[in-house]
Image 1: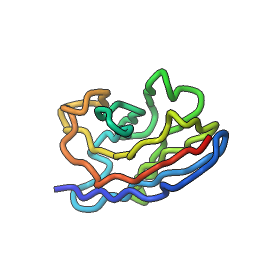
Image 2: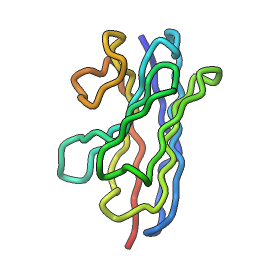
Image 3: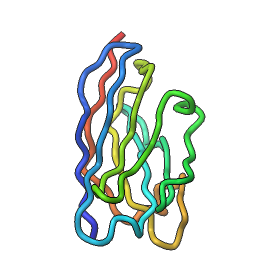
Image 4: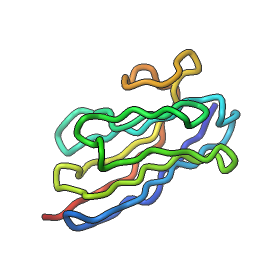
Length: 125
C-alpha cells in the first residue's frame, strides 16, 4: 500500500500561483511514477501531468503545458505541482496518484494504483 496526502490548495486570484505537494508513505516511493489529475465542478477527473520514477521525464495536458510544472524529490517521498498563471478554468479538486509499477508514466487514470484524497484549488476572476 501507498498512502498519499495532498496539501497546498486554496483560493487564489487569476494570474496567481500555487504549489501543491503530495507526500507518500508506505512502499518505496521511487518505485512509482506519479501524476496529478483534477476534477472540475460537475465534470469528470482529467489528466494534468505525470512524471517518471527518476523524475527525468514529464508529460503535461495541453491545457497546463507551459504553466504547470511537476517535479519530485525521492529523498523526501514527495511530488509537487507548481501552478503559475492560474485561470478560473483551473478551479478543481486536485489529486495525486501513484502509477501501477507496470507503467513508466501514464495519462490514464485507470493505470494508477493509489490516489490521495484531493485538495481544492479555487481561482477567482
